[in-house]
Image (cartoon, rainbow, N blue to C red):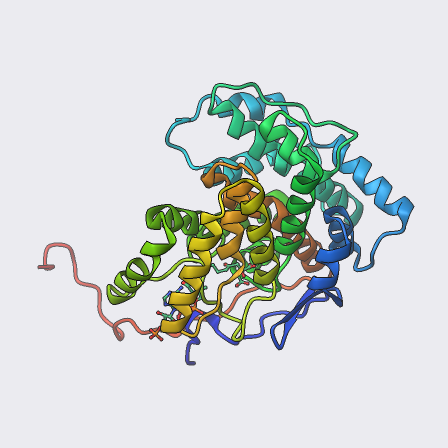
Amino acid sequence: MTATRGLEGVVATTSSISSIIDDTLTYVGYNIDDLTENASFEEVIYLLWHLELPTKEQLQELKEQLAENMELPQEVLDSFKTYPLDKVHPMAVLRTAVSALGIFDEDAEVMDKEANYQKAIRLQAKMPAIVAAFARIRKGLEPIAPRKDLGFAANFMYMIKGEEPDQIEIEAMDKALILHADHELNASTFTARVCVATLSDIYSGITAAIGALKGPLHGGANEQVMKMLTEIGSADNAESYIKDKLENKEKIMGFGHRVYRKGDPRAKHLKEMSKRLTEITGEPEWYNISIKVEEVFTSEKPLPPNVDFYSASVYHSLGFDHDLFTPIFAVSRTSGWLAHILEQYENNRLIRPRAEYIGPGMRSYISLDERK
Ligand code: SDX
């Protein structure tokens, strides 16, 4: 038995949800470019969960179900106030809150298909409410109840900021949510599938996935990109900053990908959005620093930007606190995680690979007295 480091190139399951072939990403056969241009995030959620785009009636029903299920149990909201608010990372709060939601859902352990679908709706709906409520509570503000007349993206922004976003902001948010919704067998999705393949419940699967997304080699990279852009401060400093980091063998966040070689097809959309939004906010420097970093880094290493690179300046321009960037990724990716969890339940087998043992050979027990 020989191990494959990081399971690179290992095909671990079949799936009908998303595919990456020759650097083209599709959701259930629809090119991501097409969906980003034309669909809403709610349509994409429906597509990922039903493997077909919704009719008008089906879309309306899903939108209503999501809007109706956004409110959080009071116990979960109250628990936020007991956290060390100035220290805790919102991803840790999200992970804990999803786990707590499982405690307050009477059907958490019910394993039939319809019950699991209803839980998926409830959980997807509550994800933005968790992020928004915590974002406000830690600033000493009261959480804002969702509005039934707003779509998912608009409601998310409204619950965070307390004011209705304009059309440009809603469109940008909707596109960003679509672009992050699913991505084949990335680390967090694999984590979710491994968890529920033991026939554990949906809340456990999403809690595990959030833990995996949190790391800086995965979803946590977008926050680190913003930290880097802030440290660079001006496009003129980008070259020396990046070269210094590379000389010290440090990774540059937002670049490279396990699967893509020529480039991440999501990055070009986020790059365009970054250019437009930073112009609108009167802070074009964030885009200018970003393109300079891309130019310098890719001239040193042939590793194009991934989804996390330009999403940083996009989320900054939309006015979000920098430590909310990864939670926003999680809100979107929950749609994909849930699709994969439902798919796993439909055709389940325990996921249990092997390890190549590289420890000591057979040894005899030495009693405590004789051990040195
Ligand atoms: C996401 O998998 C998905 O689908 C994830 C995702 C999704 O939608 O779910 O696309 C979202 O997680 C995007 C990735 C976010 N992470 C980062 O931006 C962190 C920076 N990137 C890297 O750490 C890295 O590129 C990974 C983690 C993304 C991929 O890691 P791999 O495939 O294990 O590659 P590696 O670390 O083994 O690197 C191979 C070589 C190494 O050089 P050598 O030792 O061979 O000389 O490439 C170099 C690495 O040092 N390298 C980088 C680099 N990325 C790879 N060098 C500097 N900066 C980088 N960013």
